[in-house]
Amino acid sequence: MKDYFSGHWKVYAGFAVAAVLLFAVAPAVLSDFRLNLLGKFLCFGIVAVGIGLAWGRGGMLTLGQGVYFGLGAYIMAMHLKIADAELRGDDVPDFMQIAGIRELPGYWKPFASPLVTILGILFVPTLIAVLLGLGVFKRKVKGAYFAILSQALAAAFAILLIGQQTTGGSNGLNRFRSFFGLALNDPVNRQLLFFIAAATLLVVVALTRQLMYSRYGELLVAVRDQEERVRFLGYDPANVKVVAYAIAALFASIAGALFVPIVGIISPADVGIVPSIAFLIGVAIGGRTTLLGPVLGAIAVAWAQTSLSENFPSGWTYAQGILFIVVVGFFPAGLAGIGALLKWRRRKPADPSPTGDIDEHAGSKVGASS
Image (cartoon, rainbow, N blue to C red):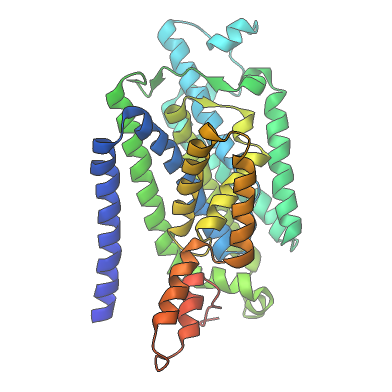
């Protein structure tokens, strides 16, 4: 009982420290520009949490999260452009007027409502992920085949957006002036957006932790490691995978919706193959089987890309590739796994089952309950 409360107090203390850093320290020490940049990185962290659940715990190499990120982003962007047009007294957004479009397309009209927009962000990508997951996992498609399929989906989605004049084509949607009635050029409102992104990240991490340490989390790990045995025990591995895949899609959609007002633009370049792989690289470097590893890895990689690309614009891609190869080749558990390894090496030989401790932190331990 003492260990139970001690472990939970550590979790609460960790969330408290994160909240203080995000809500008090960051706004006090960072400029408006840097704080906005950190808000962008937090959006990537939200995507990474979902990838960590689906890939790290579920074994599904999701190379197409840019699709769900883009769906949430474009739904939010359409609402913001409609709202801006209404403020100006126009029937259609500014870029449609330039293109000669005089009537709002039919699929844009529902997103004039803030409520429909929020529901669309939450349910449209999730429903698509459920339908796709059922179609794929029920046919026992997994491994490299699933990765290639998800990557092809991201490529097709980006190509579709480029060819659509009503979504801005290759330029995407940009120049947003308001966010649910708040002026985006006001520094106070931009700080509020950062707080929303920070709070969303903490909530997403808390929910994912509950899933990981629940009965479902144990079953998800068991499906990853011994799928046929789980099927023999009476569970349908496809349904278990679909839930994790849909949750990852939901997180990506929410992140995309927050990304739009924070960054001020969404385009096909932000939702295709390259961004999807970038999401994955951050998760792998941080440690895909841990809770905080994907978040910290995604934020660190995004920060490094922004910082180093300013000084070495042509060298960052090579550095990112080398770092990914080194982590995958020598630290398959990611940087978070180094701490578990060092902790194991410091343990006394008399301590029981040190291997089990490493497997527990690395997420490679087959659920005993299965």
